[in-house]
Every structure is written in structure tokens, then in C-alpha cells.
Length: 39
Image (cartoon, rainbow, N blue to C red; front, side, top):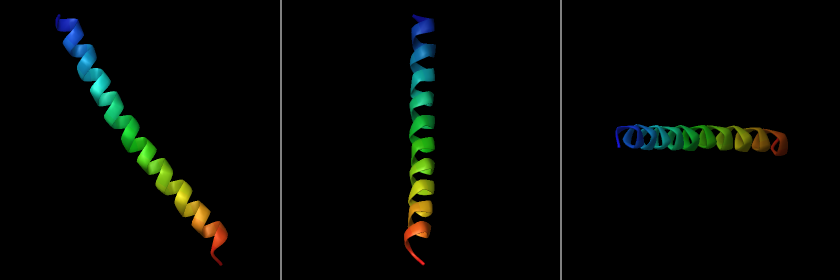
């Protein structure tokens, strides 16, 4: 039971980290994309 709670908490943390990383990555890609297209 205790191990289950810990792994669930770790999964939640990992999911939040993943969403943050994906957000940063998307904004980087958009910035590079805009710089390439716009003079």
C-alpha cells in the first residue's frame, strides 16, 4: 500500500515534469520557426 502511494506520487511528479519540458520545447521550436521565416 505504501509503495503504491509512493509510485503514484512519483508518476504525478514525472507527468508534471514532462508537461513543463514539452511546453519549453514547443516554445523553443516556435521561436526558431519564427526566426527562420521572418526576416
